[in-house]
Amino acid sequence: MRIKTTSTLAAVVVSTIALLAQSPGVHPLSGRQFAGVMGYQGAAWLDREERDVEEEPDRALDAIRIAKGSTVADVGAGSGYMTMRMARRVGPEGRVYATDIQPQMLAMLRERLQKERITNVTPVQGAVDDPRLPPDTLDLILLVDVYHEFSQPQQMLRGMRAALRPGGRLVLLEYKKEDPSIPIRPEHKMTVAEAKLEVEAEGFRLARVGNELPRQHILVFEKPKP
Image (cartoon, rainbow, N blue to C red; front, side, top):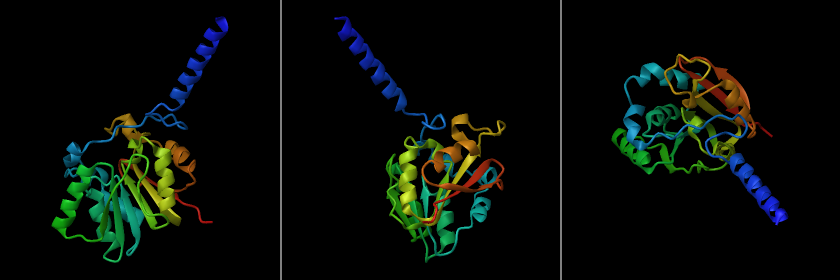
């Protein structure tokens, strides 16, 4: 009877450890708490006028240097705030894949594309563990204040790595956790060290840390060439 009790207790302990190891909401390498995904109901906040001053999106894109005719992706595109700017930069010969996990966001994006007569954007219904981007196609993937919300960041990084061409760039814009004066909740910020640890573990290399923006890091990772 004692043996059975000991065996049962051991099984419970092993199961508990396994559950803790897979506990959602915390990155297994950095221990960073994942932020919740902003719902489509907050889309108006994405397009607020103050964002031009607070985040300086055009300055960010200038720093990233998106080439005419390139194939790029806006992961976590939302209602298209950055997608529209990227579409103009790649031009009619280029292509933007705009992915989001919320169909309501993609509906807003399609409406916006139609209204502004932009034809070089392909909306993509993503999943929490798969960006669903075409393999070996992209020159650049941009995530603006998005990566920290991934509930399955490792799987997403693997999917994005597969979508990039060798030498392609993965660019994260993330609010600076190192600066406590930035009025954003801690789980919606990242340090350079956290991003480097997590992203490089999935086969990328941190190539540049840009400080051109007042509140956000520009973190440029590269997919190594063979």
